[in-house]
Image 1 (cartoon, helix red, strand yellow):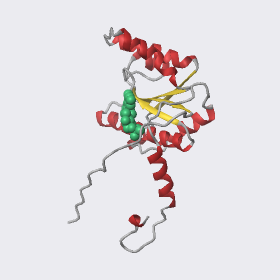
Image 2 (spheres, protein in one colour; image 1 turned 30 degrees about the vertical axis):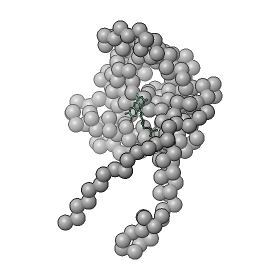
Image 3 (cartoon, helix red, strand yellow; image 1 turned 180 degrees about the vertical axis):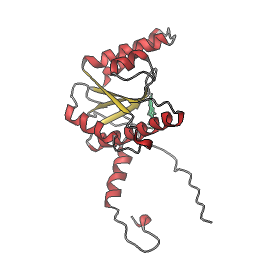
Image 4 (cartoon, rainbow, N blue to C red; image 1 turned 90 degrees about the horizontal axis):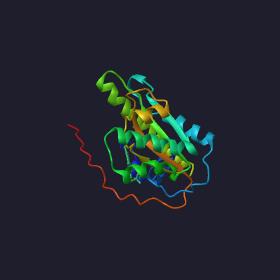
Length: 200
Ligand SMILES: Cc1cc2nc3c(=O)[nH]c(=O)nc-3n(C[C@H](O)[C@H](O)[C@H](O)COP(=O)(O)O)c2cc1C
């Protein structure tokens, strides 16, 4: 951990950093799960609570959740299919897949971002919800759960919003699949970020 040495000679405790870094690196998008092994409601509630610690400009607390288990996952698929049809889709294969796909894991969380009349705050709500979802995914990884963040077929579809109990104009930021892993996600090959340092 020499690379974290501070240039003024002070000592930086890197133990917590090492734990956080390991969990961040371990998290992988993974759909290989045991469909029949439930994820307990206490676990789900604990994960949802992690979202509220995300940074949130104006403290609007924009996150909204709907938890889909059992038959609820099929109702979610039906609502999403109806939203696709309402949007003009007549692709029967795609619509059929959407009807079934939320049953692939024992639980699916629908995470919404509440609307704001101010366009900047509307978008910042979405940013806060995304930051919160990452908290949730890291918590899931720490518990040994597999997770998969997917985009809703229609992010503001009326049928899905109504099923979830979300107010109109809420945007669905993620459909989060969760389950106990039976295999691993793809390894994360990724480039280092580009960093510009300006010091004079
Ligand atoms: C906003 C957002 C939406 C995503 N939607 C999808 C999706 O609809 N389908 C999918 O296969 N992956 C989706 N992903 C997951 C990415 O494909 C995945 O994070 C990426 O391949 C990197 O893999 P990793 O998460 O294992 O590092 C989404 C990720 C984000 C942040």
